[in-house]
Length: 383
Ligand SMILES: [Zn+2]
Image 1: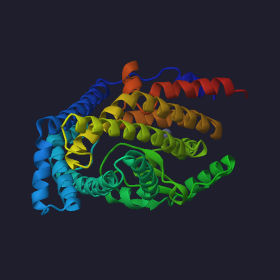
Image 2 (image 1 turned 90 degrees about the horizontal axis):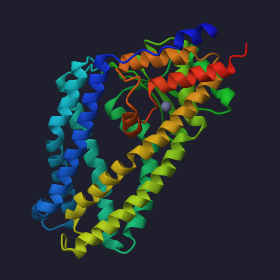
Image 3 (image 1 turned 45 degrees about the horizontal axis):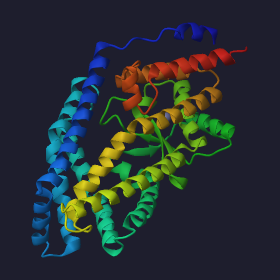
Image 4 (image 1 turned 180 degrees about the vertical axis):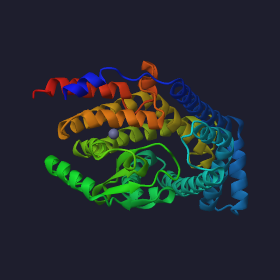
């Protein structure tokens, strides 16, 4: 333990590659956001959205429900067209820094799958939304909020079974030694996770990752094969302990509760924006689905404004999960080495600038997590 403390006092500096890669990635993210904002504003202010609605009506023989569906397809297709160049740049960036295992063909296939999945979910959500607006123009925002929360919880539960397998293969973890360690960790915590799955991330990426997903009986820990293949059992145990920390501290439930509050605020603001737009003759009535870009705009702006707060909440949870890991494993050494390996493998910035971490990062920086491990070790290294 003492030896480890001595080893860890210096944290490796970020390589120029890591700094550049992360800077470009951030700019792509910002570009994507600005472009999305411009697209939605343009749709609302120029009247193009109304034009799209008229086409949808004509093609749907004036049937409202079918017109909504056609409008959603056209809007999503346009949005995809607008963001395609940036999406492709993101793919090229991963290739340039040797982080991708995908060829262009496979990437395009994933993009197509992503579009279809988005369309199916959007179609259900938007049809439901305008159905409620038409039936209950007074309280639509409260009713839709309640319905969305039900959908949201159902999605959280079903995602590991239906959504994730569309993009990745998963199989139950076979490794007996790791299973034994997980059972020991779980018993220590007095809890039970339904399963641990191997996540075949390597067919797409060289990066490593792990997560806790699902709700109730779909709750599971997923470990990327890129992690399983390159990390020692002690290091994998440290990662498992961190994920178990999320489970023990009920982070998924807490996130859903926070999300429920934000969504309520979002619907309240959307209702205000819709009434404003009708009062000022942008749209004729609330149920005019050409106002969909306006609703999306409210959600995008709100997410942007709340991002620092949500990321701070997430970082708080991550620190809690890290502390849980320190307490459950025999020594923090493997935690430290796994973090260092992850940083190198994922080309992560170990010490990003303060404001970048504050605004963009859902996890504390690697240097902070290592410092926390070291400080925990110092205060608990009694023997
Ligand atoms: Zn975590």
